[in-house]
Image (cartoon, rainbow, N blue to C red; front, side):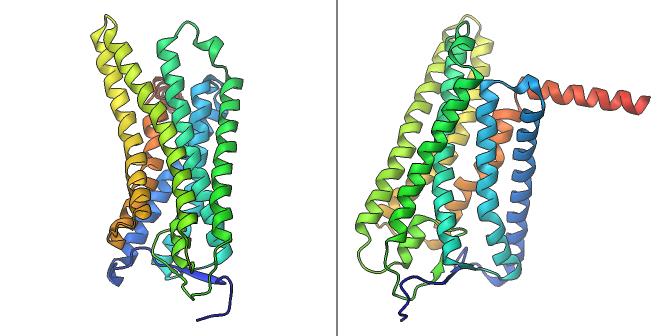
Length: 316
């Protein structure tokens, strides 16, 4: 027992039952995931900023998504890598709360940016002649700013509930790869039902609202393309939408599952819980730049032009 109202330091456990011999391999995998995310998202941001041909509404949203994913991984991955690589899992409780705010803030931002991108594609396909007048770079920038504002509100709600909890039970270990609201709740004493309910309600709003618009947008896109006279375009649209929906599903379904199990007190194996957390968090961050940007015609053509210039330069 301790008389401190809040813990000075917490310890990030990661996977609770992971044998010591797997610590280095796990840290190497996480390090590679971070490097790939850093390279892919950094490349996307750099290309969009430097190439004027990519200064378009869709790429503005993609750049914001890449920046959000890059910031999320930078805030969370280095500490858990250090925990497994150097057994350095201790972190100040204030730093844990800092992670909580940004994890929920950036997670919400991703959800709304994916919604904006889906709606942008729907308007581009359903209203091709009027798209440029309906959606400009300024309109997209304003939409992204609104997404940032909404996500900041969601993060502020979560962190305000966490800082009001009482921490006098002496619990300092967090079974996760980074701090989340549910992890901080596990450190608190007394009844946290109200705090859990508010966090759960906020999560359902910021997840289900964008998901509804995303599903509507892609279903509408597929219907529009299949109603056209060119079946090849319809097949290509189906492939593109299926790929996008796969990433969206990987982002939303495990997230919703974890929130629901936490709220209903359904006990999952701690290692399974952490694994799901890593899968729905870090895999989409690596996949988003490839699925939404690096596979587009304009980016492919840009890389072809760069390769051609490189070959001509070598010949000369």
